[in-house]
Length: 522
Image 1 (cartoon, rainbow, N blue to C red):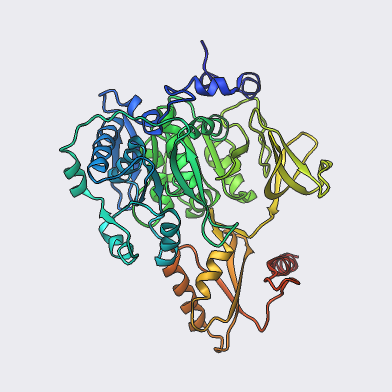
Image 2: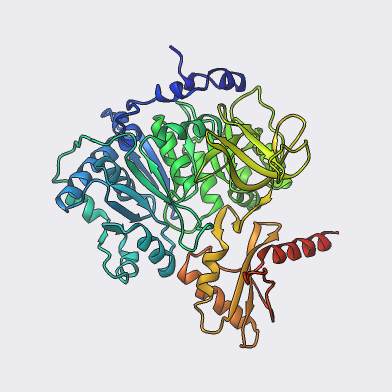
């Protein structure tokens, strides 16, 4: 009997996509399921088949098999038992892609603990917020970050390196999972746009089933693909779409390892690994284009997708000229998953430049006016997703065209998307306000040709403005949050626009910046 993975056309997606078809791709059922089993253990057949390829910045390639990750995950699960970890305890890990990273992530879920990936470039403020929120029983990190983690009172820190891998080898190489499909498997942190603390989206083991819709129709993954996603697996795109989705389908995935991102290094990896399916942020494609060196490499790409922000027309033209295929946008959030796609690999689906695509089969989306009525083609409204209990707001503005394609028209909240990174204006403001010389602060995303948006901070201070002061504020912020999370532009002002309730009115600031950018462009 045919499975969903046997189909590639858009017509077949509409005709055959179903919940029953998704479940048919897994060993587990609606009562019993384990993500580590579905992604790793069932594909570990003793053949040494590669599961993950890692392209390190120093030029080295690291290849990890399903077999060695499965063995390590089982041994780590036993190690957790010996260290007093109970089912449902949170296990945080702040590691770069490596054998310890995958062993810890899948071992925690195999055990029945909850996996909590954390970005390795977090500073003390960003790390403390998340640790205080999820209260992990253990945080596993590298030797470089251990000192930072140990400054958090009450946090149990373990260095996960070759020594730990050696230590767990004394445990059995098999561990039988006992998780229910509805047990929690992973906490995934977003940028924290709805409250002061960053929000953890809680995923159950059965979440892997729904995720396959995005894999089939958003990234176009099919058995036999050679997949690659350079996004950090600490974030939603890198973990769910770049790691869990392909592995669940038995597809070898690849990513970038430790070190500063280099577009030339990535192109070399695409060539060396024979990558046929690439899913990346828009900025990754722009950075490859800007190197001017793509002609030096032989590519095998057949499917390409991107998410996080639109791709500019110049980069889209470069993609078409260089690879001879369309770059397909997919749209979603960590909370709702991927809901719009351009169906990579579907020869009967026309990709329109700038469009988010059409709804994933089985989902209903609508652009609505403030009164809840649907908009006309070309009219901007709020993008809404149909759920059993009514319409759910995505908090994004959008429009549709006469053919039913959706287009993104801006954020409805204070999320800032810069070069593929999603950041919270509130979180950046809170860190900047800790500086002794910052009296008030407002942060927005300002239009930027290269990055889509850049973080701009409006600061009230009694200290005289200077380039040195700007750099001091930038360093102060990035040291406390993440290396990419700082204001690239700082403007010193005498006052900030406020709402009647006394809150900073960021929309006024955004509108001013948009108007200024439009004036410059004309």
